[in-house]
Image (cartoon, rainbow, N blue to C red; front, side, top):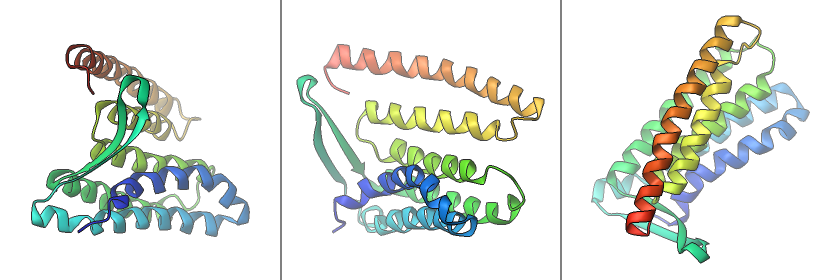
Length: 192
């Protein structure tokens, strides 16, 4: 049986790791780079540890009270599909992180890059593992925010700025539609 903490840690570790990375970067660039890879690797290992759920067809559902006045709980849902997608996200992300070590080696602002990449991984895992639409929306917003900043990473290039703005506008349209859908579900069914 998979421990109920593992699905929580799959997205919490990258988010906390991203927030700690600027402090870790003070110890040197190499420590920062390998810490970023390590955080991604740990998330991938945790996703892999959930694979017995996918093979057995079991579901792990765990909730904690989040907004008691509205009867909203935060939770994770690890079923075969979400576990499979969590592993896809984790292992592809890890391979991108490892590739970035060489590809981005001579770039400036690497602390920002690693922060955005790790936060992106945590946000994507939050989308996959969430058991409610409000958490999914937070993950969606995290992915959209990271996408905007990663697309515009080379902000001194006009084409990168234009592409980032285009992505931002398209994401806002998607956010609006998703938010309306979540509000309608809550209004009609009293749950998210």
